[in-house]
Length: 465
Image 1 (cartoon, helix red, strand yellow):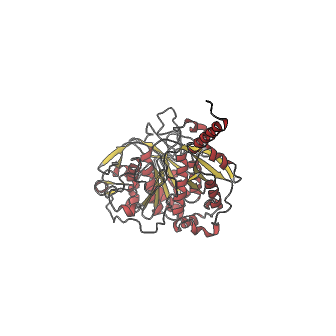
Image 2 (tube, one colour; image 1 turned 120 degrees about the horizontal axis):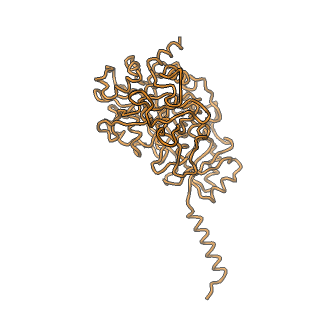
């Protein structure tokens, strides 16, 4: 017997409701038109910036602007009322990443204060919420004591330190003390082991943050970050010492090992905001973006102008606030792509290529220039068989890549920041470029060439006189 029409309609309605309730969520970036309703103001910056951050801005003559204000809680409430779940918040981009169904997204897009909506990643973790914010780091830097600067004492770290005349800074006592370094990567497993860095981890690494899984520990995930960190931070006398063992390090997990999507670039941008807020001086990012798991997100070479990637744009904003961001140029020199990636294309990134043992471009090191013709990489450092602590914390490994040349140089820039605290970020980077091996003839292969940090130090001293 045929079913009554009203029953068929009821069944269809129930089916539609069920489909809506089980519709898959995806992650989207939602940008706001303004910051109306924020309870913060530029004349009370201490409410959202640490003393270190404010000191850095004063040193560089940087004003607090509306871009620095946290986003409007009124607009956040609008996202929640529409049924979305807030994943991340960005004050510089003035927006949020939300988990939403297509129906919820359509409701959000109609809100009068929403001016940007785009897809950034599939939902891979079910842990939205308030990402722990960095606390304020006013405690003393780790003390490793006065040390002999010699090949015997530095062990396997000596060769790469010496190649860039970084040993001269160390002999003068400049080993990064007082400098706060942010490290962005895909994870830092085993770094918590007592002997990974060779001294008190709590002093050396006072905080770590996971923007991928939304928790307060980045000590998991890819082993890549641990390897990168060790080239700067390790202090194992007579075995291996990094280029800045007396600096302090904040670790940020921004890379998702489950796939490449634009969300990672937003993670990167938000990590820079967090690093700025807590007063980080210097960032190392051995990361790059050209192609993605979702091929519709892929960049073309024409996109590498420093204005397309959220990470590249954020680097320029961070630099304008007094920070230095050192990033790998990329390892695509032997591939069909050949070029640098984002965010190495950022105008104010310090992008690093790799050299082989003969101080020539390593075969894998990516070529510049940027799509708009700017010199990249900026400089190039040792990138073949670079000594690093093995990811399991036991022994050493030899690693290749601009992922290694970048932190070697980051560590020595930390030493320069300690040595010449009066210098601005622009003056520091100008000194490194102008005293590098190819300063007179920079090019697409190695940029301004191999840095000479003793010469850069002397250059800065002359400039200060």
